[in-house]
Length: 377
Image (cartoon, rainbow, N blue to C red; front, side, top):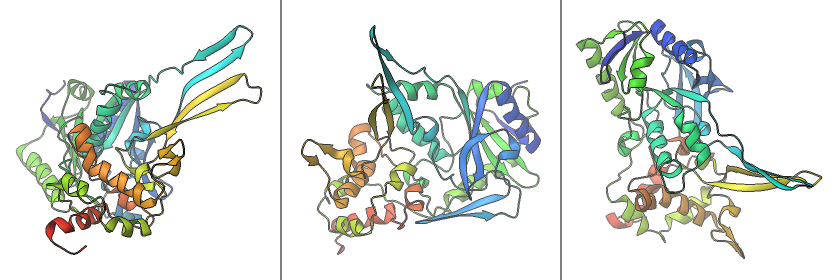
């Protein structure tokens, strides 16, 4: 028996494991949280046993470490170290291969990805980031064929966040801690009175995935406890960002002295853009073999923090760290609104956590508002 879309059902831990096993049997590759190299990362997993049982995390500007929980929570952390975009807008992919022979030139496009992937434990902020990238890379006027092919095979098993970190501010961005859309199934993990999950059925595909799993309708107490856990998480955000009027405030502060201050601290390492789930800047590289008979064009991730990213004939448009940081912050929080009608930030906090010098986006945005508030910068 399968539930209906919109139902809320209860799964115990064994049933949740059976759900993962069922997705594998249905042909999905599981990509979910697991512990590797002293961090929780998104990686391929085989099933329940690969999840970070009893492991949490502590994240703040310039700081990340794992913590040992006193329970068996499988999703008792904030967000993994890197975003799910690595599985969709992959860091490096071949665009075309050109082969020269006596018959002339042959152009070979790579085969489109066909793998079906199930994202396990996707957080609300991560789903919101996928939506933002979809607008550009799948639904926009210049769709990326590789991204669209990877995105087409995705099943989203979300987990509503109940353990935000000090760097989190998804409530300010209205992107969490509960996933509101964009999922097939969305679970809230509860540890009392027994370890179980209250699961929201979002799509027909999600309902079908539960057909051979031992589920029952969640009772009123279970639903209420799950909702309360998410409400409590919303009150535990480590950061806030005042978004009202932020676009105009930033665009009116392009010559603010705070840009010089942050440039003195910024290393230009591009960690923030690599860790960000919405940044989509790329570049292309051309290479040839030693014979000159085979040439390849490859696309790879790039960043507005690299000198060559803004290079045109005669030099870089943004030769200073001041200019590059300003470009990143104003695009993310201001001109993204001009392009897409929404912010480019989802409040995951990774840009702070993985900044070697702990630059805090929310603090910089607040400082840049200071003139408008009559406060000395």
